[in-house]
Length: 601
Figure 1: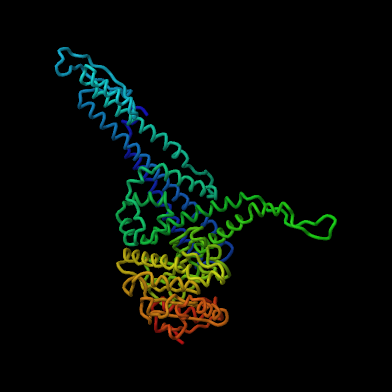
Figure 2: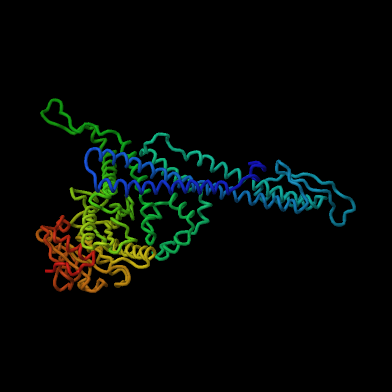
């Protein structure tokens, strides 16, 4: 880079451009939220028919465009901030060298060389003419030593100083050139297709851009206070509070996965980050799945025999691609279910969704934490923890939309029981749920791993609520089947009471909670509610008693456990959330704090 270019460089111009891109991204985000949570939600709540369906599809495409604009503007903004930062470092070095050269009576030429005046050393009788020196970046001990030796023996006392200025100028110009060379291809790469359709390829490119900018901007990003290492939710919240809006936006743009997973941060921030991860991951998985060769014909007639055989081509394909295809299809099925939940916002008044956690490979089964309603603004929050077989692939299974649907129905019933108050329900899947009844669901280690994670999430939810409204919401944690074991371990992971993170525990179809008394869960026995059912639910509960998930062979529905046993009309282990059921109304009454409306056995 030449002297004139670096001297004239104005970092503020690029920082202002970064601000403009960030503002554009903010407008795109606001437009997306308006489309999703007001326009589409209102249409789903009021309109039906083919025309309404077609209009909703077009609006969903528009929402994708706004989301993509938001992502790209965030990446461009961070890139411009990173470029301006790197160039500003070089420019400050150059400006300091120029100022020192002028103060030392030297002149700087257009090519970066330094001219020094006539002078003589102390004790010399004759003047030595001035001259011009050209700097080098040096860095090697031998040349540096030779320069110092030459300066000491040179008859002009200004020579050594001039050489020092020239070297500093050369180093600054080299750093500026390196920054320009590093950022030029990165900035040129931040372009999008000129068609109006946001494809999987576009999102994959955005993910690639994000990684490239994050690596290139490492020097700039290192100036932002680091996220606390294994920080508590309180420490995380304090860290986020101490960042500027610009710093927050840059971290969201280049590291959404980390921001979305940080307990204690505001729910709208985590949702924004995790939706970005979801969009990029979904696109990457779709492209990877599409790249798998088409499955060959599986069966063929055996020549000469009246039999059908599996073809060698299919066997080879299965060995190479079968497992990967099944894995990708399963993960995409779960991601599609999450998107479907977004698209149900407004239907029958359903509140908007907040994606508080997402990782397609987290802990083996995938991580999904999805809220109906904003927990930071809620008066009542219910956290539902699913049990055995839960995972990303099955999160939306069935006509009732699986575990996500259960959370939605709990929200609707709880909202009905709490008119004029805000309710939020959360489906929490951030543990490795057992994948089999025997042997996995008979072991406590899955709960021992998941319980502390649930504890940290609940503490983070409390911190975010207190930061948003000065107090936490009335909070109920519901554990179903093995999920109740996770809840029991969570309750014993820390010391909390009514004033801390949880008010009520609801244990449904529980095989045991690693405690033999309700009072051991830390909220008081009267705030621990239990519920059971016949048939396979009896098998689960008795199995837990025999396998040791219940401490001393005691399960929550036992009278000796001491909780409050609710009446259930479930026909089995999976019917506790059937529409209009007493089982669900009882749970909703606890979530809404309407204890007097709970029917007890």
